[in-house]
Length: 153
Image 1 (cartoon, rainbow, N blue to C red):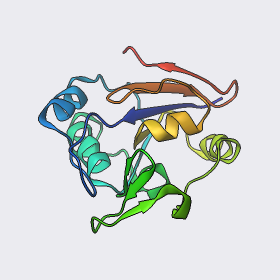
Image 2 (image 1 turned 180 degrees about the vertical axis):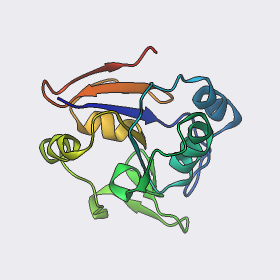
Image 3 (image 1 turned 45 degrees about the horizontal axis):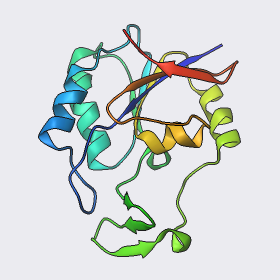
Image 4 (image 1 turned 90 degrees about the horizontal axis):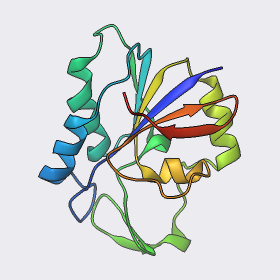
């Protein structure tokens, strides 16, 4: 069994490759870090890198960090529109990404070491089949039972 933690980004500004709003970043700073994190996998968009920058100083410096666009890219979503990093707006129907469907995503999570921390967003949580994913939360996922819950700390 592996436990995977997912930190979802907080509220963000509008536009391409958005940063956190001051309130969104404050929310991220308030989140407790699970103990014994063995690895960090961070999305490549600014909002995910900001999570990493906020949390990494409070972790063991020997924890390896990897970057993976499928965990969270630099594109932003605005209803039926995808905002590309250059500001171009396209319809979601024309968008193909490095995304993985829920079944494949669970398989990928099973390959990660126990106590891996993902710097990601609510679309990843929704993609795993959980309804009502929230921003600025830490979710604890069990790769055997495929259940998840908000991490309380």
